[in-house]
Image (cartoon, rainbow, N blue to C red; front, side, top):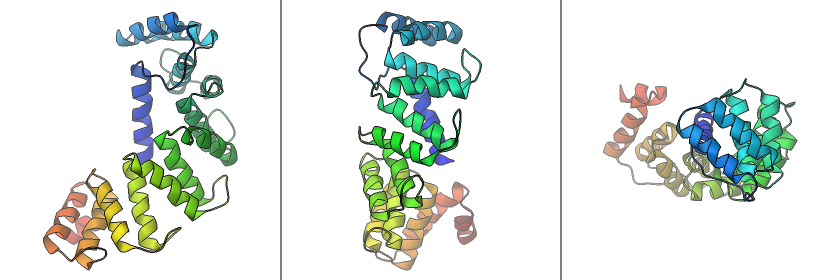
Length: 247
């Protein structure tokens, strides 16, 4: 659920701004800019028409915009197959964001048959370009063995790449890996450090874990006040276990 929310936010940013994650040729730039004017004026059907003109000229960012519009049904009827088709056109031009979205469509089976192996391949292309959400998803797939052989060490490596870019969910997962000793030597101190990074960004599960570790003295000196503080933060975000302990 949390990852879905952040992905939706990124979709929003990419669509409603002129941010480009591809090297666009000059062809189609004028039509693309016209499309962005209509987006800012909230005339989405007209924006679609101009993005389509640019996309037909091979403009990668416009192709990505069309993928988003077909995915959400903005300015056009919702059509996951068309979304995949346009994402893939941009992805084949090296657009990291579009590569990530193609992977996501295969992962979820939207517009294509669900295929974890293909999802992994597309996520890898985007992750190799430094796209943080793709790096996190590679960690998940190595962790669970989806589309690739299960490999906790590789999972840790990709979680770490995403965590170093500040992705809260990756920081939380590194805490999990160090706490359990999956893919790394068990290390409560490092687990605490990563959980705390995520907790201080507002991650509920991490706040609960930091509270537990302060209570138990795992990886950090026992501290009842700080334990209560983090448990309280988690409880306010409806973490049931924390609510039970806080009372």
